[in-house]
Image: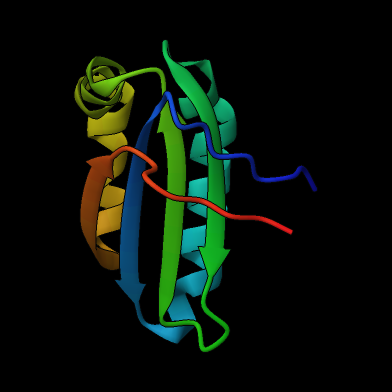
Length: 106
């Protein structure tokens, strides 16, 4: 597993997906596959981390992009537009894009 390193100079996109616990594993598989096959090759992509709730009810996606235009490019990519309904069938989601304004580590 790689270390998570959040860059202050990047645009950070956080998605919270709420799902039925029985769907979490299927959803995680879809997210991993899409990250590896599509997202990681998109212009401006820096990193993606998935956080799975222990109770199976949520997944948080933290991704970083070069800038807001790169996020927009991802959101309008035809492969992503075809992928979004698959996710929507398993979960509802909320998103926020912004900048890291404070971080602290040991």
